[in-house]
Length: 312
Image (cartoon, rainbow, N blue to C red; front, side, top):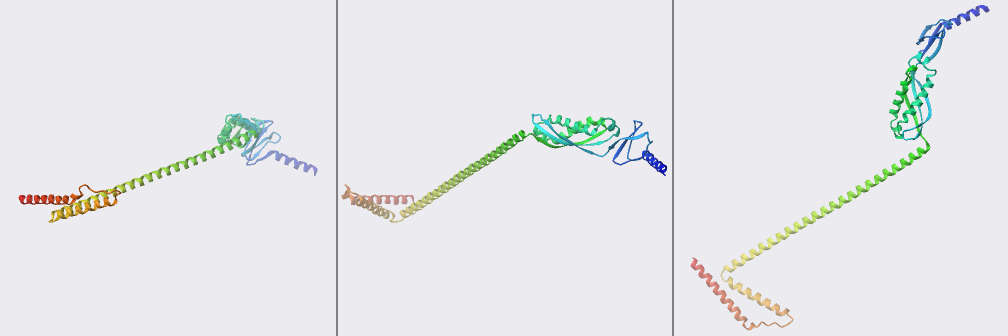
């Protein structure tokens, strides 16, 4: 019975060494008597017991490796602490087994050295603003160096870029100064706009006042012109009426009488308002004066009548 059990266990052991099932996510590197034989893809395979063995197993899925934080110096001599993630995939199981001892550790160390080198080419502000181009540069350099290892670096992502405390304090002061500068610029622009608006308002007010004064003067000139025209027209009409009246019979007598009354009225007013007594030297001859005027008027009228008769 014991012998049968031993035989069954030996047969199972032989079958275990003979049969190999490779999972879908792996590739297995097979060695025969210590020498590389082949790389088995996922599926069912047969091995020669005690001659063939699985030397390495590699995961063919995309792997994520954490790159520890490290100190870097930027182009403007600023100390930074940078960490990241590197994504890679095994493309050749043989090279991943025999091309390097540990491709994971090698990829992480290569990512660190490449990251230090690339950050040294950029200033502090560029490391924040050009993170995508920095990731692409690191991936390109790592992938070029890792090609003999049988792995493919798919991408690299920087997680954190942390300046030193002194740099952070300086940046905070710089940002505060920048905010103050923007505030002062905004206030200056507001004051400038207010002054422009005030000057525009005063200019428009002066224009409106000048336009109003101009319209006022034009209206006054028009009113004065109309007044002069009306007065002139009234005087012309008055003179026409006077000339028509003088042309009628007895018109000159009426005019003489009117002139005498106005003269007497004016002289009476002067005598009344004067502080001293004013007596004309020819007062005694005043009546003769009027009689002489009547004779002159009669002579003029008779002359005019004869002229009309001759013309007729």
